[in-house]
Image (cartoon, rainbow, N blue to C red; front, side):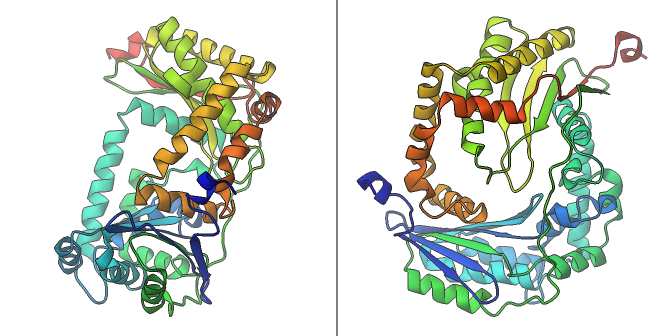
Length: 432
């Protein structure tokens, strides 16, 4: 291992411990700071909810810190404020995420509060109603957001109604309005547990002391009712181009969302697909799409591509904001760039520039406890291995032009995509 590789998180300086309740703890000592960060995840995301209760998992996650068997909402948040600590929970598709930050000396109280919220929430009615109101307001606002509406329409067309990716984690107005405190409590009882939990601690901590604190706060946690891990299958890819159009009153701009099924994070060709995506719509001024559609032709206010990469088949997306008169021209231009990406290898210069970009930004992601904690959590969650960061540079430079081409060809087909457009209605309807 090179001196550079040895200086970043790796199997030699990350302490990994498996608890008998299924929790996996990873500790990385960073003595250069005075703070500590915790990042955790549990198998309690929206993949475990029924379609008619879309948003249940994320609402439950938001409500975990509103009251526990030991303390009220005010007491919980006053205790965090008194030590200048931060703690938040958020629901995702596959997992519930927990994030916390405090001075290193306050790791104990931070873990105690996190444990209390995860194990003994009470879901007090007044705070559930407050969160419900906030969510409904957000959903109503989003219904007039053309970028949100285009993205939602694309996802719903790309994934069948039986697939968990068809539904957003935030739910809809009908489902959120119907969720009860009893359902939140039942969801917590069935899905929030230590089996499969990942907890990462990064900062100015002593490994043995951090291990002791985790044993005291989470080591005795058991949930015999915790459900088995749910998986998201790859659905059938689009057969031909599918168009979706959403009309939003009062708007003057259109947003375009074009999608195909992308690779999961653990796929062997994920990094090659990332390189291909960067060339297509990320690197520099948003890659080839940004250069052509926005800079050279002036067809879009923004235009870029994005590759997901979670535990399942996240979409490979191209997004653009355009004048309604330029919608078809922008779509045709984007499809041309996708066709180019899947029909010819990228240039030596494009490959070298993007390899340098990918490896150059890694140290920036490791400048803070938050960044280090996030990277270590990803290594464990996606089973990348604890030497992933140390080997990352070599892996990137082993990717060839043909690797990027094959990855693009596997996931992208300009003739088989979902294309959603959200914006103003035609003139005859716009002024009605």
